[in-house]
Length: 247
Image (tube, rainbow, N blue to C red):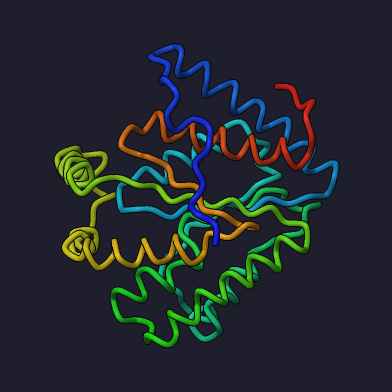
């Protein structure tokens, strides 16, 4: 069993001010060149973001996609299933959102199939046999993707309860951010120990050689964004080979 991966950008000294912006831009331009090579080679990348509420998933996704050709990627923000999504197997709504590489080379999921072993488990929306079976089902799903030529990169955005409370408070007191904070966020926070147990088991049982988790230390948003970008760039450079230069 693989452990959640650590990757470049997690512990290195963080550039300040213009240095951070320069590092971010370099990584974004490297990724743009690699995305072009994905298109040329008809390869696909699926990026999964999970994490604590207010851990910075949205900000990381915006920096990840900022310099990409919008024709080549799509971001799915996953909420509670509705319509056909709620009537079919929970993995069906993710299968149907995948695209062949000549249409979209990069698919990003802001929350994902891991809702079965996180929210659905803790909130009782899935029975214990269902969420326990989901560990095997998701590992099989990801293996099928990888064996079909899709690279899967998964991020868990980690913050402390104290940092989450600070961010919740900032959202509540900042007019243009209040929409980000809901009653559900506060209810989830009250169940932190239950979610923590679910997260720990998820990371242990679904970090596999073909689709390992990368834990992103997200207390510092800038460091987290660089780690996400550098991880994706590193994975693609290993897959596609060296030689990609910023364009």
